[in-house]
Image (cartoon, rainbow, N blue to C red; front, top):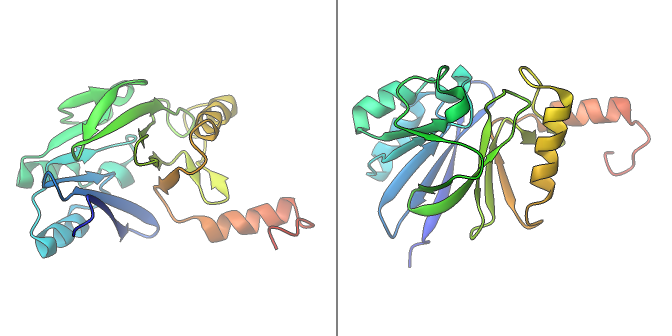
Length: 194
């Protein structure tokens, strides 16, 4: 029997992760933060899937660059943060903190997570214990603070800490090696990091 849902990782650009969430029961497919349309289309075509939704966590081009071509090709609905509506074009459905939204036929809670950008949001699937965190948190680090403040980022990280500890976090980039180097630089005697 097929899994009810599956998550496919697409490595894109130099260090981006694009996520495809597939609901095999409802035959719904969603892409989260498409940095590039070609990478996404390659997977969709190879799996013989139609794209139903495009989800954005924030406005940076390396998370939205594939939006328009994917939307036009697949007639997919684009969902993005209401606080970034003037920075992301062609959004069909705006979301804000506390909203409940259906993503690939699954219930997700929208969590506003400013810091990296002011309007950044994450999508939390409580039943599945999955968080799509965009550029809020990474392995051994957090996102760069471009638009918000350090306090904003800290508050966003506290929101993640309050989630079920079994939650799997899907982030927007692969920064582990660089984050580890930095952590060892500021904390060279930490045996756990070594």
